[in-house]
Amino acid sequence: MAKRELQPRPLLYPVPLVLVTCLDEQGEANIITLAWVGTVCSTPPQVGIAVRPGRYSHAAIQQTEEFVINIPNRELLDAVDYCGRVSRRREGDKFAALGLTPLPASRVSAPLIGECPVNLECKLTQSLPLGSHDLFIGEVVAVHVDEGLLDEQGFIDYSKAEAIAYLGNEYWSLGKRLGSVGHVRRSPSVEHLG
Amino acid sequence: MAKRELQPRPLLYPVPLVLVTCLDEQGEANIITLAWVGTVCSTPPQVGIAVRPGRYSHAAIQQTEEFVINIPNRELLDAVDYCGRVSRRREGDKFAALGLTPLPASRVSAPLIGECPVNLECKLTQSLPLGSHDLFIGEVVAVHVDEGLLDEQGFIDYSKAEAIAYLGNEYWSLGKRLGSVGHVRRSPSVEHLG
Image (cartoon, rainbow over all chains, first blue to last red; front, side, top):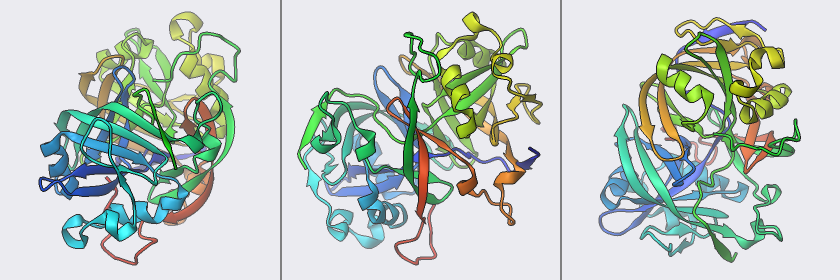
């Protein structure tokens, strides 16, 4: 297959789309949609979220040193799209605009989004200015999962997650399960990917 | 929906699976499958990859300060699984074992994987020890895309990408395109998510 060389860009796919909640200095909650997010460490559990310094949530996260990653499902696609393009400065309270339910978190002050099936409470540990974006690294201090997403053993059943993937500027659904780690060789020494 | 609180973990989904290539100190190429990867900055374009210090590729990337992110398609699922679980120390040359084609890169010495439809050449800019993993941040210095993935305008047609998503320890295909950024409101001021 012939290849074409394109301008350098951070072309990764598929990536997650998350709704990040935080509190501003008045204690008001905000929501921002982010796709430049990822796991950066398993132990202690840490995630990275890249946020433009001009965004309303950027100052809030820096001040409070807290945020919550809320993973949406397909029912929340309109909210995902809205919270990625609209600023609180102009449009006000996004929880109210979208009819979403703020729930109290266990370990941080920022609220969970009740409608999101998975919520990760995070405490900011590092902030790295990289250019257009700052990378906020947060330790995951609590995890909440909808009961309906768990199987009898308490594991997440991803066939029920109705996850949204982001490719380019497009939202995609997931298709089918193709296998799991170790499906090629029956080796017992499965190392975690990463 | 009732929620259950689980042990803190970096529970993000869906995430990409990539094959990262690098050269060791003998100039031999290696391949490692990683899922803890993400975009961390748009300008300059930068990506982060989390690698355990014990992995063979960890030392190689630190020494050469280079790596290539190769994005696989479904045809490469066995290679993805193999390269995530097998070490070069034990099993030797993974290009040879899998019959993959190393292609010369433009800006780095590590090879591209010819069979992967997208290749991002990266130069290491920062290395952050975080615990079980070190986060390597790389600037994307060249991008290669299979001609067959591009539409007439030169944009990527993700319906042809046959992308693999990773959820928990499961490999999933993508389903269908649900929309694109801005599908909710016809605002012209589309901000990039991130």
